[in-house]
Image 1 (cartoon, helix red, strand yellow):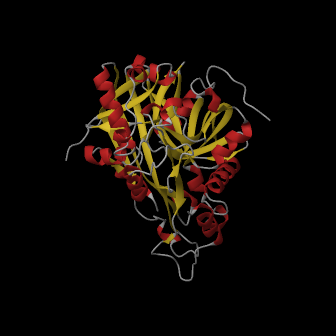
Image 2 (spheres, helix red, strand yellow; image 1 turned 90 degrees about the horizontal axis):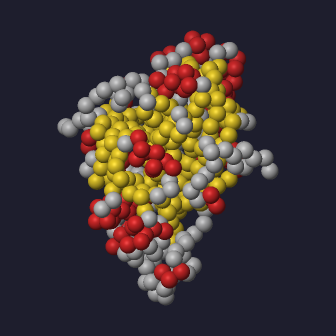
Image 3 (cartoon, one colour; image 1 turned 135 degrees about the horizontal axis):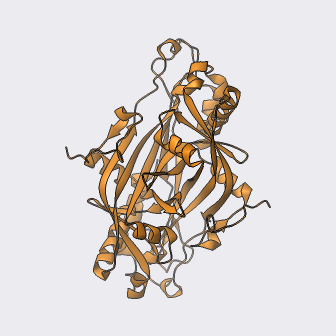
Length: 220
Length: 220
């Protein structure tokens, strides 16, 4: 089992029985979604914003406009952190204190650099798109060189990370189990609904297999 | 229409056609979820972590253990920001550049203080629980004074905020509409599955109305 080393930065202090530093487990959390919350400092204040990402090994790719305040701040700082979380259930206990949620979260720390070489940028955007929906990149119009030029592509290399996972049932105080109070889980899941075709599709264009595969893998 | 005033801190720079400073619109985004990403600075680094919250007017309530590093850092800083986002659809365009997502996000900025008066704390935790699931608080065992004592309750007062919303279809380059490329939306939705009762329920305890109401309001 490959693990991230622990330091004060990434060590999970609260609920350390839910913590993991296992690289594969963290990668699984990253691959189960494509939106991360990236933190940056603007005039001394910490701000976090949702960003779509792609992952390849220990590299995370972000992109945006050249004028994106967050991306340019991250490039100035040369480091960043990102958090990804999937909400899996409400945990409804017999007392308020033991209410909780089941979830899988990962917090990543590492270094940031701009990719400026067109081939590297193109490869990063391919990875980004494949991460969101496998097969999409090959089905669309290739990027014009000017489009690639005006896109800022950022590579975030994960240097350390931690995961926190809660995936068990209700845990109440021993004396509360006799109470006539209902306790249990309400599972929560992000699902895809059936694809909706654009009104202006060219003639005879059908929903392609990669889109239907995504829908079938993510529908309820 | 009541609006937050704009400054460099909360003004949406990229995609300002998607921006809103409308208080009601922002409150609707906050009330559609209960997990926010709170940012704080730890040894010069910005970190964001998911936190459950409740809202009452312009006040947001958070809570945790007295040893929670993030909450104690926020109390030291006396200010914080929080971002809430709901993902509504993948927007699949004919070119890579126009791929996007539909979403509703709100970013809040304001001041932070600890609630230490037991009645205020209890009221904040009631609000917190009602925000997650209406009716839950009245159905559970009341808090013991020691439980209230060891819970850190933080009040975050929203001073300024902005929302960003994308809720339209695909927008492609004019010349790309003739391409034989499928474009459209894949709606995404967070849904609740049927409640699962704890194994150790006291005799004759049924799933209560407030839990079934939540399930019915959030199922597919």
